[in-house]
Image (cartoon, rainbow, N blue to C red; front, side, top):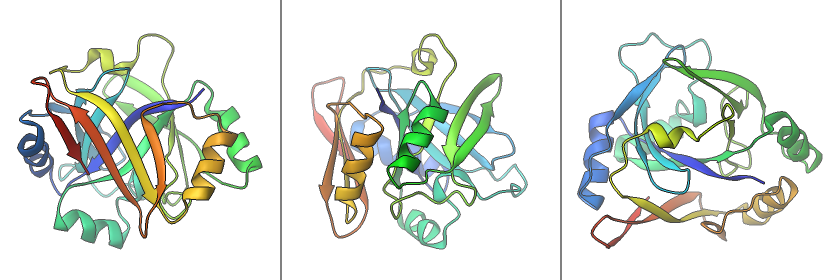
Length: 216
């Protein structure tokens, strides 16, 4: 069974991303760490039910990575969109067997890429990413992540009481995305797919004081 792990909110800088989330929710997402060799760094906050929000940006203190940055961040269209303001670039789904689900996706006609080792400090995990770091189904297909066994990584993150209640992926490829989710056994009642003229992802939250807020 595959569930929402987190989403990547792309921003020109972490400070811009933090201000964007703070203006919507009233909360500041704390600094996370550096993805050495991948050219990015992030801010992280737990959002309930083994999930979290990630603000991701290019790390100006790293040299250009040997491969494009993850999640299609170096695509000129993504760069232009990020320059206009922070936005949810993609959802990342959690699996307990990346190799199995990569093959299931291929059997269903969607190539999610290859297994890539990743790290932040002492933390290690694997991602399923394409070699060129583009996202399948014209950007709508979420990458997969597999964490080491044990408590979910969000349990070690700051938790201010922000709770993810709904995440919607709107895309012209809604039918193909729904078929992919069926093939790899995505089961998360917070995750919705709908038709849209272009890819657009929104996340709905309950704030600590009971308000409902949308990040997109």
